[in-house]
Amino acid sequence: MWWKKKKKPKAPLKDYYLILGVQQGASQKAITKAFRKKAQACHPDRNNSAEAKGEFQELVEAYTILKHTDKRNEFDARIISEFCDSFVFSLEDLDEEKSKSKKKSKSEFHRILGK
Image (cartoon, rainbow, N blue to C red; front, side, top):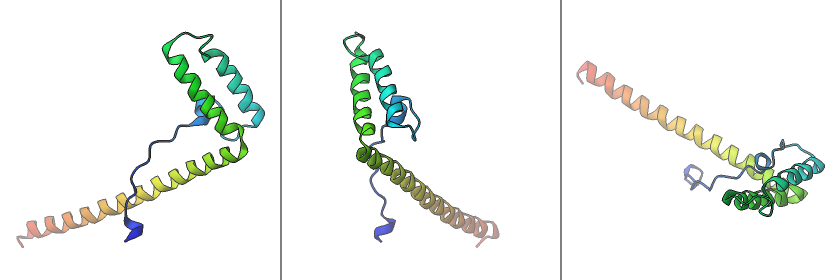
């Protein structure tokens, strides 16, 4: 049945709020302020370390998503969707474990009785 087919796991989402160091309900002003503060610290012109370039690219990616309301809403919806998917799959796994344990306990019961 189509609803019981497990979906292939997607690549984990980057938490853009965590990257910028803001809470999920942060205002546009707070997002911009956090971006500027972190950008000064990890900009490749100021920081010559090898990780700085990667951190800065990740920071810019997070900022471009969160500064636009439409993109931010899509990102938030995807977070909710992935949470719901993981919750549903965990329930399905729990049901499978219960059914396996019932089968095992029945066979164990019959083994003890000698049947």
